[in-house]
Length: 113
Length: 145
Figure 1 (cartoon, rainbow over the protein chains, first blue to last red):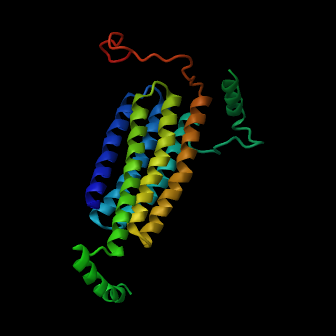
Figure 2: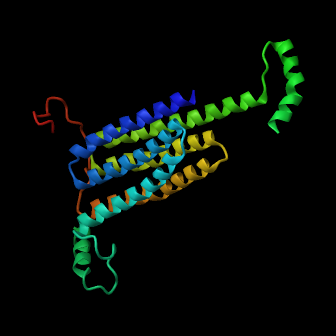
Figure 3: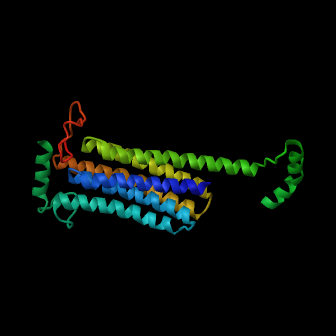
């Protein structure tokens, strides 16, 4: 009885993943793709939880915890890389850092325009 | 403990069988209630997750897409995890599912905010004004309006 519900929900997660793949392939901008990847990761986490209930083992939920945190870090890393073109350095410009002064100025300019 | 209560309830159950034809114990009522509760929560969560995926695919603009995905993903995920928590009872599994729910609840809005902030800073403009969906005649052979 509950098994059918788990399998139905897992299949619905897979349908949602297919819909997100459509947006991931045809996204006009980078940010659509980043958003689709983030949402895809959330659905993978839910699928892992349901799958560990289907097969009756608790291991999938551990991987789901890991995947949640990895998904967040991956999203932030993608956004940071495509904004600063480098993964080194602080995420926000430090008050007295020479290195990010021009980046901060460019940010302020693009925000005002 | 359940065995002793079962043995004490045995004469009552026989009494029920004699009078009503079927024994209705509180255990089966509780089990069916838990099944209905967790099933309803999981189905609500599946609805929200599918609605979010469909909105992410079909909305006209990046910011509306982000609204559809960011809102419904968090809510649907919390509903599905709540249904699984109800089903697994008081166990180690519930604690792990609670951890997953907590991390999703914290990181999903933060990631949505980061994506929206990055898009806004990069100068991506939202579509303003009345949106008119492209009709089938305006779509060229490349599939775009």
